Image (cartoon, one colour):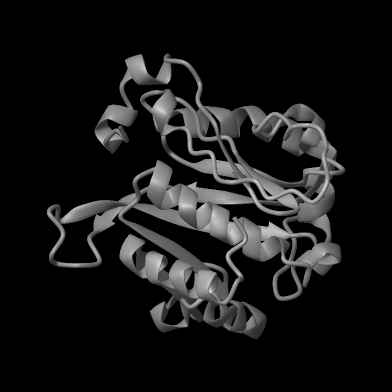
Amino acid sequence: MIVTIEDQLTPSLIESAIQTSQFCGKRSTTLTNAKAGIYSGQDDVLQLPVALHHHHSPPRNPQAVLSDADAIYHLLSDQANFPYDEVQPDLSPEVFRSRVDKWAHATAEGRSAFMVVVVRETDELIGFGGFNSLPRAPALRSSHDSAEELVGDAGLVIDHQSWRKGFATEAFCATMEFSFRTLGCGHFSIDTAKEIETWRAFMKEMGLGGTEDRMDSWRKQGDWEYVYNFDQETSGEAKKGLKTKGRWPL
């Protein structure tokens, strides 16, 4: 049973056993570190089918850990991974070592749900993302029972050396599935700078181009950017289309 956001914040749930969720594609594992307060029991752990070409060890611990700090630093400080944005200044492995614990506490309280993306055969960390926040907002459809619903405000970055290899598709689909099937989000939201035409093309390939809209930019004052908001029904239609084309990666 997926709990409500009010239940997520109760001490009894936060103190309960930590649950995790792993989304395995053909070559990567998107590892979410959402914890107690988002799950209420073992039945809420979502295990998606694993399609493997080679036998190898099981996926690693699904939570960002201190030993990930160097890899996360190199990922998020590499300007090549952010061709249209400036990387955050004053980053260091020490900064991310301090953030790992903060991320764990934030996810335990249901405020966010970050993840790392790992190549399963090598345990190489090639991406980072998840949910920057989990706010409540007006429902996308007036037919919904509740006027408000949980929103998965998502973000994702993949190392530029792993672009055009299918990893972004796996990670995006895993994040989308996690938002609806495990967190119980009413809708999913992700945005991009207006200059990033490759992301617009990607969303069209995912069957979600029709959800595109514009909003005021949080990156640049006085500017605007593209945003994609869609619910589980729209996500399901996109998933069906990808399966028909043989492109669903999970």
